[in-house]
Length: 193
Image (cartoon, rainbow, N blue to C red; front, top):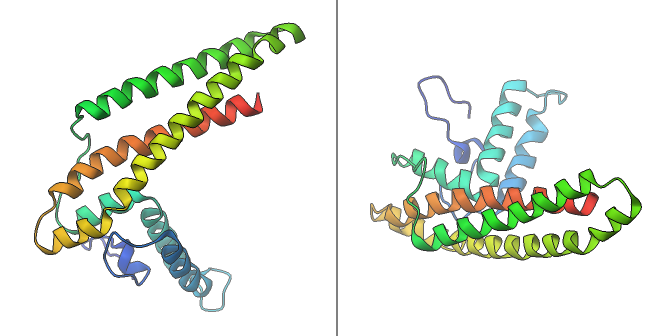
């Protein structure tokens, strides 16, 4: 289960799972729970190193992007560090940048507002920024889920020795997940402010 210095860490193997992309988050969670109960350092048979390996495996496989990159690495394919940006992704990049900049501007104005009236006047722009960011987050999530829906296809392609589609998806997925996290952060700031 534990990787030595010469071995490549295999999160799938660590959790006793088949090496395939099309594994659900529930499957990863259930495998982790079953193994981590015994490995927890407080358990009679527990071992801190094994528990750490299981936690690392869960973290690696929990997110679609990290799972895809790990799967590619285990397949001997170097995942893209910075994927090619096609026209559609470039358009989305510009949209993300614009909406996040609008949210940041509202957050800055709200932080600088000193009176109840000035804060109240920012309620409408804050709501508009929150809605635009939530709408964008929805679009990003749909695009990410569309890529995840192709994971079985990537598994089948890999069995035939082809990784082109998976590589293209890995680059795109990296951007989508990063932008999703940024949108979530802005939404929390807009709501809690």
